[in-house]
Every structure is written in structure tokens, then in C-alpha cells.
Image 1 (tube, rainbow, N blue to C red):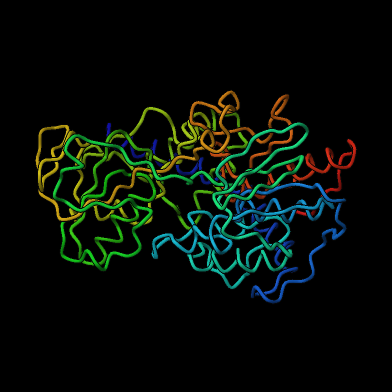
Image 2 (cartoon, rainbow, N blue to C red):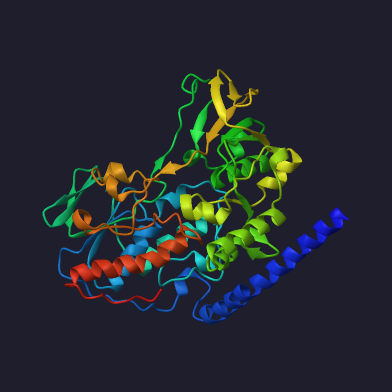
Length: 440
């Protein structure tokens, strides 16, 4: 009787959830019908987008970084008639996307992952690949006439009278009344130091330097950290003949990328419109139904629902694209956190010791804003992340691409925040008017 009751309850939750999701699905389809009629299928054949070409007098804005956030800021500043200069440390736009591991695809859908004014082409799949995103960013820069100064690695930004001065590693200085910092969440790799790591005989790399699984075929590889990068690298290794293990330090929120053909990103955006308490409850129910209890595999689930965790800590849940299936089959081993390293072995928190041939540190990154802007710690939150705009002594500083707390993914946040920042910059430069709005 108890089993029958549980089944009935589960079916009720599923039916209720399905009905709750229908309005969002209808809006999604309607939005596509209205939007895609304006698009062509390749990057070279978009209709002319509406944006303003006039420039303000010299002394406009500096944009630091030519990744997605920097390009979005530049396009929106141009739409507002504000002159700008883009400084980029590397020799190409969107450089990080060219250097990610080859298997990478977006976990957010194409139609929610584009930059302002220009959707990705319909020929792209639902989840564009690394190379497709890189090609889109290169096209976007040309489309909006954004030509950065390459090889200009910003090392310091500081106030000087009524302007901000950016100093680069090349020894150059650039001055402007407004600066948009768009250096990204993943500016500096985070590498924890465990006892014995430096003297360990096991070669190690940070996930930033991981490209493909082929060199590790047949080898015992310990991937440290089960965020989205670590989970997908472990999957990549398993699919190419390596023998991967994951070190999982603590509880992890995991969600399926798609459920019954519906992307989790779109579901999360729908639930975000509900009162948080209700949205969190529905999200937890969906997580239980689709992911279940993984404790017997060594993966604990936090008490905090995925959406609340994102809102409060900026920590994105792991979006599963196949890793869990291999964990359940035993193709990916799970270990707890690392206590220390000894010669060719890792010693884990539960006392187990295991030999490995390679370590991949999927231990994340730091935005390191405080290193770029010494003296502005009061601007940063507990994660070291800044607001959209500074105030008071920090007036004229803007930050794009650091909103890790919003539902829907970082690229979507960039698309929504860039026009707001550009309008604020225009207001300062045009004598306090509201600036000219841009078409998103």
C-alpha cells in the first residue's frame, strides 16, 4: 500500500509539474515564431541590425576585455553614440572560447545565449559547440565594427582626477571618464595547495590547460572537483578510453540538461518567475524525479535547492550531459575530498589511498578584480564579485559579465545587462540624459 501511495504521489507531482510548464512552453514557441522570421541561417547573412553609428567627442569609454561581455558592451556603447576603445590581452576576440576543451558545448540554449542585437544563426544546434561560439564572437566583432587593441593586458585601473586610468603590461596607459571592466569570471585559475602536491610524482594540469582526452587513453586520471567542467572532463576521458575518477569534496546539486525534451535553462527561467519558495519547491521535486538519490554512489545532495543556491552563492548546479550514467555504471569512480598526496598516490578524506597517472584540477577560477582594482574591496561581495556600477569614489566604473546569481546563464545576463550599462555610460557622457535605447 505504501509503495502504491508513493507511486500515485509521484505521478501527481509529475502531472502537476507538466501542467505548470505548459504556459512557458507556449510562450517559448510563440517567441520563436515572432523572432526567427527575421533571421537567416548563417553568420554572413543577417539583416542589417538597427544601431546608431554617431560617436561622441574624444574621451569616451574604455572597455577592458574582448570576450562576450566586452563585445556586448562595445556594441551597446556604439548604439548609444559613445566612443570607446577596447583593450584585449590576447591577439583575438573571444580568446577563451578558442582555448576551452574541444568537447565543450553550451549548457544554455542557442536562442538564450546570444549577445545584444544579433541572435545566433538557426543553423546552429540547440546547444552550440565551442567552435561555433568562437565563430559567432568573431563575426559579432566584425558586424558591430569592434576592433580592439590586442596585446594590451590590463594590470591596473585607478582613479586620477576626473578620469580612470588603465595601465597595461606593455607599459601603455589609457584614460577615460568611464571604464567597463569585462575581464570575466574565469580570469585566474584557482589551484588549491594540498600537502604533498608539490613533491608528488603524478603530473598535474589545471582544467584550463585540458584540451582533449586522447593523450590520456588507458591512463588513471583523477579529476579534482565536480563542477560542470570537472564532470564533463571526466565524461570526455571515459568516452576516450581513459580510466577517470572524480574527487567530490562536498554535496553537489545536479540537474539534467534536458527533461522530456525541455531544456533545464528554460524551466529555470519559468520557475524564477514564481515566488522563490514555490519555485524552489517545484525545482526540488523535479530534481528528485529526474536525478534521484546519488548517495550510494558517493555523491551527496545539498539541503539547499539548486535555484536558491544560485541566487545566494552564485554557484551553478552541475548540468548533467551523461556523466551520471557512467558513474552509475562504474565507468567513472567517485572519491571524497583529498587529504594529501604521497608520491604516486592520492590519500582521500575517508582514508582510502589510490595510485594515479595524471591529475586534472577542475578547481575553478577567480575573477581577481581586487588585483586589477586595488582599493575597491568595498565594492566586492563575499565571492569577490562586483555590482554593475560603482558609486561615489567609484563613479564611472562599470562591470559586465560578473552576474553569477541570475537564472538563465551568464551569456543571457550579459545580453540583458549590457544595454543598461551602456545607457548609464551614455547618461554620464551626454550630460545626464537617459541615453538612446538599443534593440536587444
